[in-house]
Length: 444
Image (cartoon, rainbow, N blue to C red; front, side, top):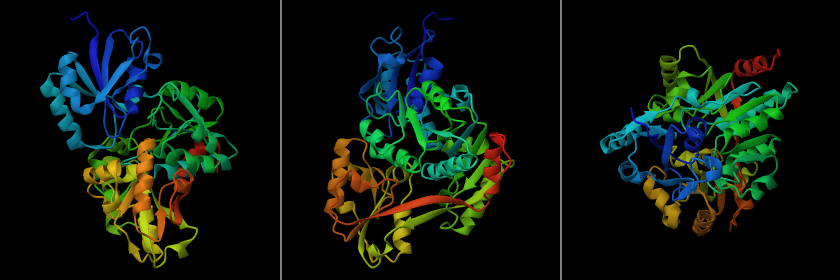
């Protein structure tokens, strides 16, 4: 039996990796986390998880974060005993490819059960998760908060982490106003998640240290609503799990990690987008859900798309801008802007690819399923400016924006814009609403 601490590498993407460290490894001398690796998100490697978060005694210099491409070298150089997989929305093929690399380099490859790292809150918790990113978690979360408010209760939303900036400053974040996002220098990806909640009058917590976040949120709320990211599981132990499934990617609920975990553990599964999906795909999705979780209640829902000025679309040449993560690692080819444009008689959809610059151009090369739409990528100021330049280079009459935020507020667009909004409308409102009311001790 060796006396030295077990040497660990955490494979991540600036989210669950930090959470798993905080809950499972921080301040535990029997482990030594040699490094984090990073992937999926640009510009999150070649920095460090700071000592003030990692623990000064064991990690006086913090913990380095390296590109996942360097995993084999890190395993050899740091004599790593085990690599802990800690990110989401990846195919089973991708998970096992990475495990093969890790095993071949001489380290064990580990998966952590969500239950092992979940925090117990002092108030009831509803977790809204999904089988893939872009399924409609955020609209579902907003509906849950609406029901809570109708019962006269207070809800705090805790959002899955997106700590792409100064990790110390992002330890525990609270967002209640648009200015809060500006003050905390949020990226487009963060604003897309926080802004719709803020507009609805909801308080949102996010950050790095979810123990602290949970304690602050439960102090001002009667119930916590977890708003998941990608298809990750909840960081907080749920009393009710609502999993959102997408009929546009039938089969992915059985072949992506940890989406199938969310499917199996769901109390309620919402099949979203049934108003635009192929009915045969909806039926097949129902069968797939039943095959994995026959006890779950299934609720069909529409993703209602609204456009304030449809006359600006009719007969015009348009550029379609969609939610970035839904198109990139979510692997969708179109989104809400596309369906809105088709519904309102678009004249021509302009292919944005010839006009893309730098990192936006690279995104098209990495995600070839994107053809008719532009992903709203803005993980930092440089990429934000490249998005702005790309939009302004496209020869079109109008820009149709299918992201949850007003892009014209943060970049200068040289042509008219049309915003597309979308909200959940469940066809069986009683099932999920009654489940939420029961948690709060109410009858509807």
